[in-house]
Image 1 (tube, rainbow, N blue to C red):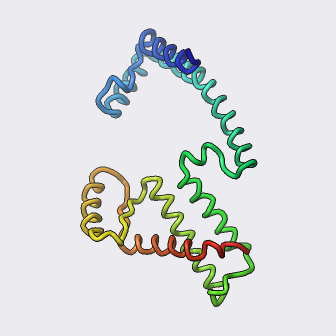
Image 2: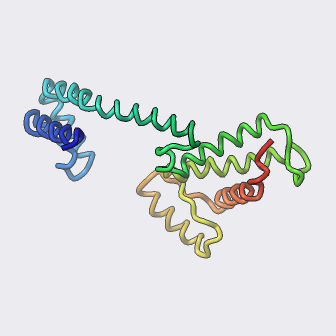
Image 3: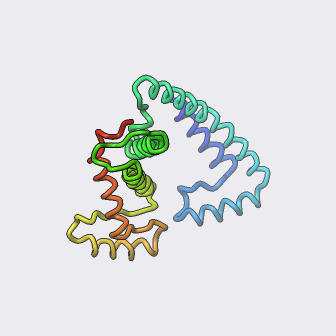
Length: 198
């Protein structure tokens, strides 16, 4: 039996049997569970404080494990350029790296590709690419919904998505103009990929 299994059983025994604390799995919605738990905390203040201390004590092994994992990831990035954590969410990691690299290239770079007529034109291209990767971060985080403009039914899909998301979430459906700007930045990234050096 692993340590995590033992801690889970201990958690269940202490919280459910001894402290009789409500558990989120026992309720239909999270709002119902929050209300019941708030009532439980007011009704049993001592049990609530014991549960709080146990939360901290049970989290300590997990926190130690996560710190060890962070050190391992740091070493992996130094050795091979990426870590196990990075491939779990490669798009997010790559967006961060690309945004950082291109921002530094724009600030500190002294040259520009032959196709560009001036440094200002090159900086405009870099701004468009950086903006696209920042938009990609928002898409990854669920803040934006991207519907490709090359899709034949993108107008209808955008309308349906706006209707569905208006009631449910804070996710913003990107306009056709925003989608084209996003796509343009990605196309520029592909076009100038081998020119992204100083």
